[in-house]
Length: 199
Image 1: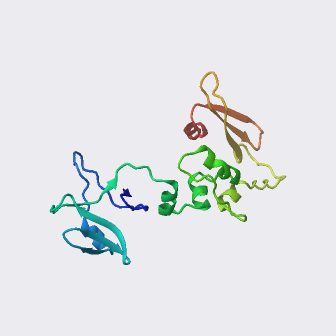
Image 2: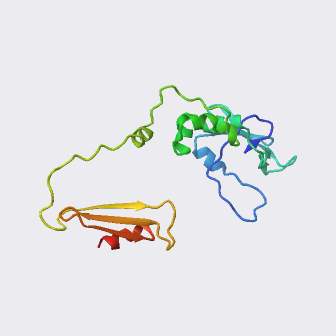
Image 3: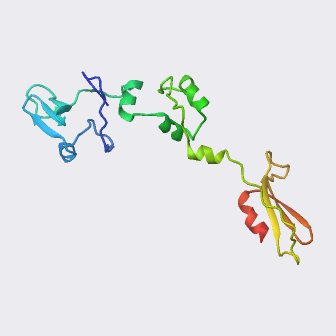
């Protein structure tokens, strides 16, 4: 909400939607319970936060007992005002955009709306999720032992095809019996079909 005559924005919560209501009602009780102080007379009512003016209510017209806030409803907030409210930083953008690389975040302002053109990227930023995702798994240790009877040890793997087959198969599950080296492959339409195929 952009308050008329002020260069700052005020976030009000919670906000409830009432269908067909022609005006927006604010509860002074909610503001007072939130720690704000009330100061006013018949011409002006002000809510103070830490001694500073937070919101000012004026009579709807001269002599009216209904007080209103003069606002620009639907006014598009500036990027600077949004930054003052949300205080976004590199870590916030990194998490909300699904951990993109620094190069992507460096260029993101050029291809998106309502974002700063430059995001300050720290020099020594370490993201545990990115670090873990880029590591390769250790290879399984080699072994010379073999199963002593059929189906004692069965190796299995589930693979997806990049393109569906003619019969609409998207996955294949492979079973390899360690004792006999017999192999079975079963084509699957969906991934959840792997469990009945295994049974």
